[in-house]
Image (cartoon, rainbow, N blue to C red):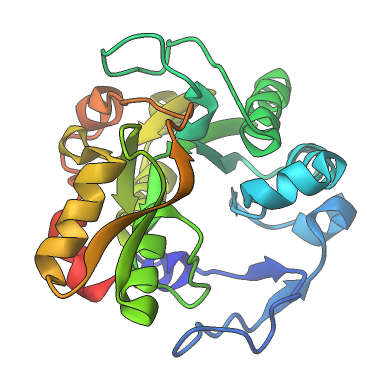
Length: 286
């Protein structure tokens, strides 16, 4: 979704991908030609010469995969990010936009919405890898190199690389394929959501911003009105698909990953930006 949005905004876009999922796209895939067929862990400075910016999305982002072998997650998400950023800086790339995550807030100890200064309490290898990658990028900032961390809320929506393991997409897919809206937890946990198209728009906003507005900054990406409990999301799916009843998996209990997020910083810094999508209105087309 990002490449077409940036092209529409007038940017020249070249993809960099290992293409492990070549041919696995959902629907019509974006044409990434020309493209660099590389792993982020192997990128050299010479391959990034002449670029003005890098938007870094690559990661192992599935929590069960992280639990299976955390070293894989750190290898790609942390070491790969640091390698790519160092190569970009050496090549003279001025801006490095990093897809981080609100999951780094982990188990919130307050009912208040968390801003970018809140304590980071990562509960999974994925979230921990994002925390450590942000720290490493901060150490590289300066000398004409401006890293920016997009702490994205949990993303939903249709895309060529459709994720069906993330909460809203999963609820809808499960309902569509089985006739039931299945909760793996008791549904009490809070989670902020953001549509994949709004994430792409936010990335474009950061690329177009003056350097002093984004240099070495972290931004929560989403909107205050899209902090939901998992049970509320299940009820939104049921409202759109009333033939599907909400059910709980055997042994469903409270999910410790629970947090509400404050998105005021990005909204204040970029008042023209608005999330165009909401979870409740998007269920029918997720």
